Length: 390
Ligand code: BGC
Image 1 (cartoon, rainbow, N blue to C red):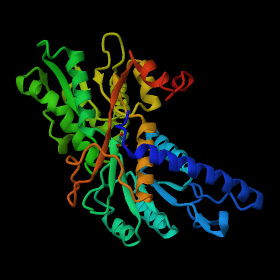
Image 2: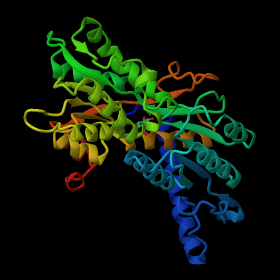
Image 3: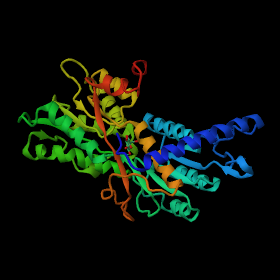
Image 4: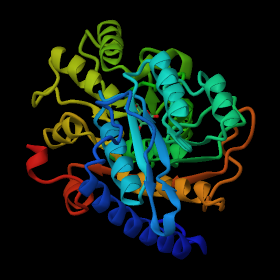
């Protein structure tokens, strides 16, 4: 899926070497009873990495990598964290994986601890992209390098790379799905639409919104899509913290104000799955889900398990699939490159300007899953088993 680079074979060779060294070290450490102190989420104050004897009397030190994820409340971040930890450990690194409960101060504190513990690279999915400038300055003073994971880190020069899925394209695919399912290109309509946006402190949210609106706006302007609430601009439709309950509350208000007298709601643009969960709950309470009042088309993103189940049950229509395994392996390649003083492969050097610099980025390709193709996309690829979706 990724563009091959001339670095790839070198990186693999190094990885194999690292794996060999790691397993030899692990065996001798086990024998000495020294292993078992690698930090994880349950051991926030784990000690600094141990120096371990290497061949020829030298001292080899496993590099420590900090992985800072926003929350465990959305399944995708659990998968991102678990994948990153497994891949990096497979490459011979020690990993400090932390989740910050969607709380900015917690994330800042966790990052400070990672720097103090001697992490050489920080992989960060920021809660508020603009709120970690100071701690990143501290990282730079300590020669700690930073990779922005999935979400761009704003207003800081101290970000080496950014790896994500093509966020604008995510929105475009959602918009095109709506366009196709409603037959807008064929001139069908008018249809009633309501629009939701993601968290305003997440740089991705405007990319998703702009991507979707690049498809939908012409139909709004021509009157083929009508927005009865009149609410379409990003600041009005954005849901702080990607919060399901807030999305549910906003949908409740929209239903009461605009759809209480039998008006039909045909489609809801939801940027992700946590919002879709709240939107579906609201509509369920309002009596949607029967033969004469089916759910509208509802979009989503992440293919979280409850949402895939909702797709199978005709509550949610689609969800963008961003294979977290792909992203994690790309970021692990970047970590390797940084620690070996090499350049990582990127495929975008213009789009992601964080206000302090344009961050060299690697954009992975998103696709969508719905009731018709989810088996092929999610099960055949080994992402989920049939049982996961029961
Ligand atoms: C991610 C989405 C996720 C959202 C809420 C965004 O930055 O790209 O995949 O649904 O955050 O956690």
